[in-house]
Image (tube, rainbow over all chains, first blue to last red; front, side, top):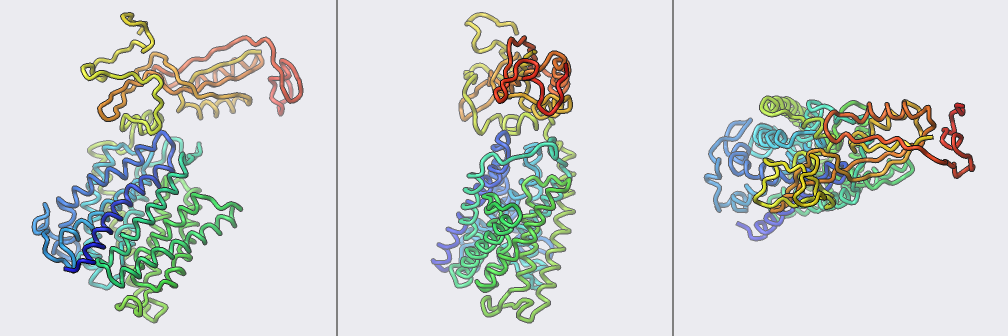
Length: 431
Length: 121
């Protein structure tokens, strides 16, 4: 047990957990005001549901000894997850740290289904997906599964988290279909400052995500920390230049998107590449996502917040470039293509393709299973009214005009009182 | 000339605008208003407080039209704003005494005729 490692990993766990509320702000600012709470809740609900499931079974399926494709059941209900040392930190802390990844991964998918997915269906989807899709893929790469044994490089989850969530988002957007006003009406973000706030908090949390993935306060963590700072800076600059070239304006949402894409791209490479190559990687990563985003807007796919372009395409770019720029002098284990080890790029490509295939098929099946129990789409009229009122009975920006207090002994739902609030007492109104 | 005032559901606004555009009705103002038209209130809960939202968000359209444009305007709104549930709103047609176009000082018929379309007599 190493005290510095324990301290850093507790801080990292809290940092990564903060990324989910940060994502709620990022996504919440991008939607229309009538759907702001529902969108933010889709992220927040993962903190509870995915967190709980991780402790119940998800951790065991990902990290307990099992086959090459899925872990076993020995750690279900946290059996055997004790204060004993795993690596250099207590096993409970390792479990908690990995849980924060499961939470953010399912929350990422929500960006593709916002403004139209029934909340109960989303909750069911989230729970099934975290057990049936996230846990197995996490096992492949980190739990001693088959991708780990062929030597794939995925420092902090570029494939497990971002490619996985990006492809799941693509499938979910396609299965759910377009929002009712799609392509007829522009959907404008209702609060761009929220988007910037969310981006800042995501970057802050991402230091725990990437540098924490070293599982200790060591040199590898310091490298990942540094690359996490500079790669997104490069992506943001290139993204903004592309914006300037295309529209002559540096946009705020463009800057935010560039940062997120850079963070996604450096994730698999964080502790494997030199800082200068991380900057090159970050700069290159702007291009595929930028043009994927432009292309998506011209298609019929309503991947509403472009999870596929940002996380899917960004994750694939990062995973492949890890195989190009990995540097043995910095990571001590493996070289990439430019240092003469071309095979690494092949291994990276294989891991991406297999993850995409599994994620697509499994996500499709999970959605179909959920749809058999509860319809995936909210009612059309509820979608028109706004998901905040229809799914949650709350508004993000409520006006208190005309809000009548319902006293506890009068249940408004069972005894609707049709008298307008301004009718004189004792008179029935015209109902 | 008439002033057509319509109170409609907020979520139908885009359909109504589209329909009005198709009927060549080009000049209008909209206002966000709150109102009550006998529809069932929705219930919201904030911690221990349950409230009935008595006033719902509506959109008000004000459209000044020449007489022969009244019917197409009303039909367009009626068609696009209707859902069949209580709360679809109302259309009022009011007589107008005088209209001026500020830019040119044109009056009445000339002032409510779209600039790009030749005047109907």
